[in-house]
View 1 (cartoon, rainbow, N blue to C red):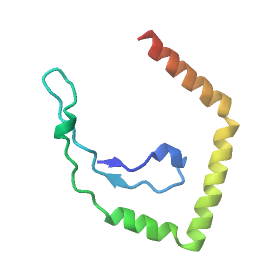
View 2: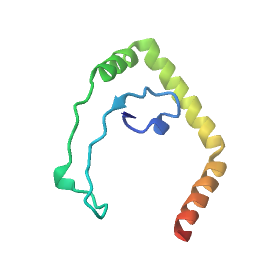
View 3: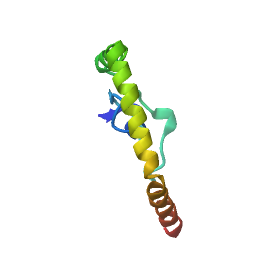
View 4: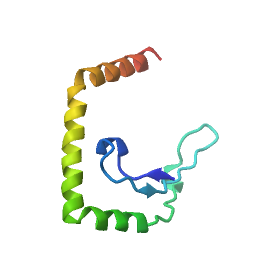
Length: 95
């Protein structure tokens, strides 16, 4: 089971809900068989609970403030994060 959306986009502040990933089989050569993909049942309870939780006025305010603080902290280390990203991209070019 995976988490829905991009957990890293929430910077540790936003709710993370479980999702069942799309199932994509591959042929003998490892090529995805897109026409045979399956969409497993999704469990809605965690999503409904998260939405009910974050729509409470004080919870929403707390998450909003926490998100702002997390974004500012992320940006304060922006150059470091950019360097990590650039090194990762350069490593892809070498492979």
